[in-house]
Length: 206
Image (cartoon, rainbow, N blue to C red):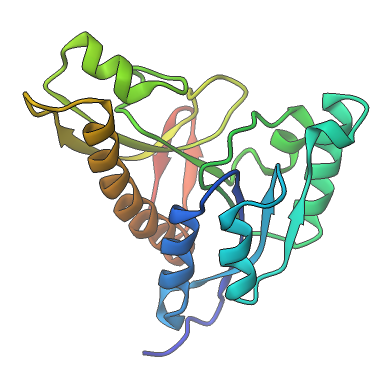
C-alpha cells in the first residue's frame, strides 16, 4: 500500500492504560491509514499509556492540574503543548479531564472524544452503570467532537451494543469498550483520509 500524499498529524490525550491509544498506534503503523501520532499527552505521570507511547517512539508530555496555580493556567499549558505539535486532529482516548475555553478555542472543531453510551442518553462518567440501571435493551458507544458541555458535542458516529439479561456493569463495559475501540480506529481513519465538515450539530464526512 502507498502512503497518502498528506498524512494527518494526530495528538492523543490519555489518563490511563492507553488501550485505545494502542489501537490507534497499531492502525497508524499502516501508511495507508493516513495518520501519524506525533505526540501523546497525559494529565498524570506513571501510567501505562505513556509507556505504550514511549515503546512506539512517540514523544510524550504531562500536564498535571496540580502543577498549575489555576485551572485556566493548566488549560493554557495543555493548549500550548498540543499546539506545538501542529495537529490536524486531537483525540481524547480516555482523557479524564474537561478542557477549558482556550483549548476548545484552538481545537474545538478537531477534538474528538468517545463515550460509552449512545448519547444523548446517559452522559457522564458512569454511562454503562446508568444504562444498566435504567433497563435499556441497547446501549453502545458514541464518537463526537467536544464542545463546552458534558458529552454534548456534534456526533461523528455511533455503534450499538445489546444489553444481555445477565450483564453486570463490568461485562457490559467490556463489550462496549471493544465496540468503542473498533469504531474509534475506523472513524479516525475516515476523518483523516476524507475530511469532515461541521454544520450546527451535523458532522458530514464526504
